[in-house]
Length: 276
Image (cartoon, rainbow, N blue to C red; front, side, top):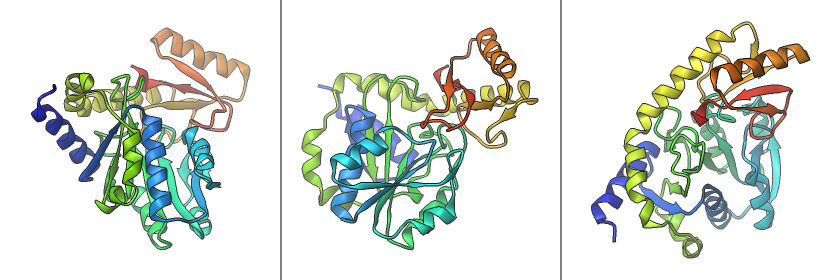
């Protein structure tokens, strides 16, 4: 058995980083998303789940369908939420789920998003897989936070995730869903270590992002003045594309090609700094 003190330390850190008092571990980050959406549907039984039109995660579309909910896309500026469009789509919206940073690229206007949603009693689910442990994560402006400890996340345990709630009743009314999730205690020691050092990890990632943006400043960098843990560089020609790829190879950076829903829906190279 893992000592209670270790479990208590992990929960205390999750509470500190998310600013939520109610925490549930899951075996996967996707499980945490499903749980949060299930809870939202039970608490606020309306028709739609709102999702960003890019810079989100794939199961934002999959799980509402399984829960017999429809999805509506909210317009974004390469992942950053368009507040006017969000406000126009809140009628009959059960919840809005989005990532901060947007597509791991740029911080979101989290307070403004929350304020807009609250005017229509739409629940806010903030995906903090790429921000928990940094200043970009603040559950003060969310009803739920969800996150993954998977491969290539800042907390890269390679297993598990979590969902948190701002209010106790958010976990009480849909409590039956928690019989479907679990977390293996064998991972606690490594998770605790990673949680204790995640703030240092973000400092390293942010520093590397700033370096890359400076070295590629002649290129069209998406949200170049905003904070994130991935650098997305647009290209106009095949020569520009190859030059960016050559830069990544020369410096040992992994990269992916866009358009991709989880980054941006345009031709670009996503430099996956978070994988360092």
